[in-house]
Picture 1 (tube, one colour):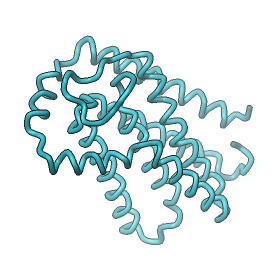
Picture 2 (cartoon, one colour; picture 1 turned 120 degrees about the vertical axis):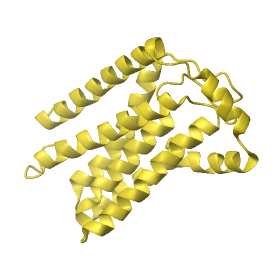
Picture 3 (spheres, helix red, strand yellow; picture 1 turned 90 degrees about the vertical axis):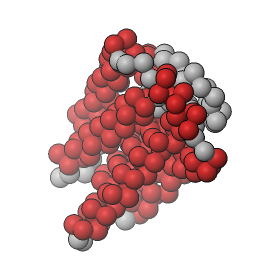
Length: 209
């Protein structure tokens, strides 16, 4: 295993431990979010729910997986090997991270009607983690292709809006607490940025990964 691969693995493990600690701390000392979820459930309209059902797919691995595969192949074809790895590892690592932390924290789902079929535990939100990991990884991967800072800033705003929309959709659908989606964004975004920094520090060494 190369030194960079070891750093990536150690960083992933560190984020899993951070997520486990945050989940344990929040579920034991954090405020009770059940009442907030009941209020959200009472206020959700048919139009809002319909929009949430559509938007939430932007954080689903079933949609992001094919997107990541296409993006990875296009980046490889363009000769951007590090960027391709960033996108592939971003989504894969984010999805695995969310799954492992869910098992460690074992937080139950919100006590409201779930408007989407779900399984497993609640913390962190897998959709939020995957959305942040993929969209931020993709944004950072294609950053060298932007000739103007304004264009990159616009793309960053677009990615940010997608991630926020996914987070809101999970709460509206009643399948996650607000803290679940916030933790997912922090973990997924942190993972994407960490991978990007690893790629930057080893850019001259093309075989470092």
